[in-house]
Image 1 (tube, rainbow, N blue to C red):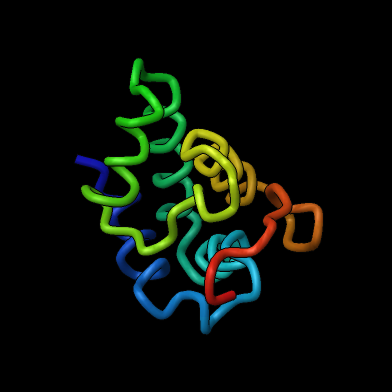
Image 2: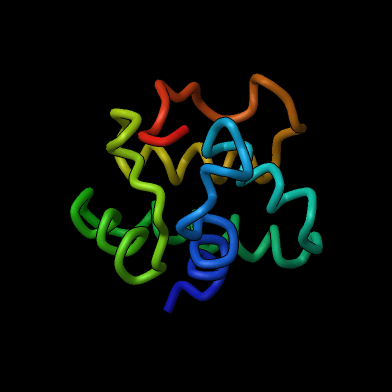
Length: 110
């Protein structure tokens, strides 16, 4: 269903993702910088379609955590899944650096 989102979630937001970056958005930046432009654009388009749908916050959370299989829950940083997905989409097109995405208060274990 959301194959690119599942790829990001399972390959980059696995159970040890916290050991690989100080902030969750840095994991997205690593994805952006490591994957082909086609894969990055496919994920960005998939997220845009998801955000434009009538999915509720509960739906978005279920899709990100359960269906895609991510170990990062944006609620740890007191943001909604919708806000997180917007931040991911922005980071996929933004240059690397401290202004990419939104600031995080810190997930447990980070």
